[in-house]
Image (tube, rainbow, N blue to C red; front, side):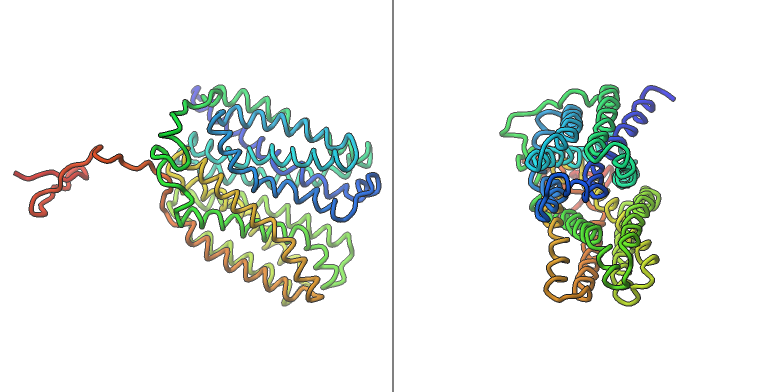
Length: 428
């Protein structure tokens, strides 16, 4: 293996290890919530903030993360984010509720930098394999959540909930070391040279048309928004649905939630295998949307078969998040466009997506049952499929425009054209 291939393999390993850290500290909280509530005297509203704040940070801080990456460079930005993540993971368990919430916000900010900047890194350094690498990256997100959710409770039984949450800082530090080595070999250690503000910027001429004006860019953002709504609604309420619908035990509800998360890893791994090097992803999007519909329709029509429906839904959520991030990379013209599209998509996606659990819970409280909430989520799944059909179209966003007078030629006389080489020439 030559140096270039070794560098690419090392960068791939670093990207995947960083991704493992971008959901783990959030997923680690649920298994130890009872101990945290008892020890810190947390109210239900504060408990909800512990899991909601990072998602809100994903939305609110996405533009700032894109700007930070452009000014500082993706290599340094992600490194500093990993170090902040490691520190915040420890600090949040050192005090009471105020320290817990402050540390949670810092964790959300650190994760946002990785969320926004890893897709353009993949776009810029893996070329035609960017789609497959993004699928692996999203599978690593799911794996990180599943890993911490599975191991935090056993660690807490031995050493307490504070140690169980703080120990995941080690994983962030390992990722920081590997990232620093990998970006040095890949040429990401130094920020790219930034031109004056008059020529470079999100809406400047050198950057091309604003992604905010592109309909496919909006489809990409809405795809992530609907995916986030569905995922967090199911993650939050699935155990309660089973307890209410089939009188399942709390342990059964927890097992269903674990199944939903674990099968998501398989779903995420299927996407890079199915995408290959196809230019469009419309068909895949329609299949994933249909799988989402099956989950909610099944829970409505035959809740006793929840094992089947949750398995199909787990595949849908894993494949859905993989596709949502993959289209960010595939629709972008270049690394700069991927950074801008990633910032926009995550601002729109997580800003809207954070309302999913609130919507489902509000409808449940208003109607006293799960018929209306599940039907609404099924409708959102249909919308997801429709948006995926737009976001999956083989177009690119954010290409630099041709400056007036540069490379232009006068039109051929009397409509006569020579198509050789794709150029128009005068015929004398």
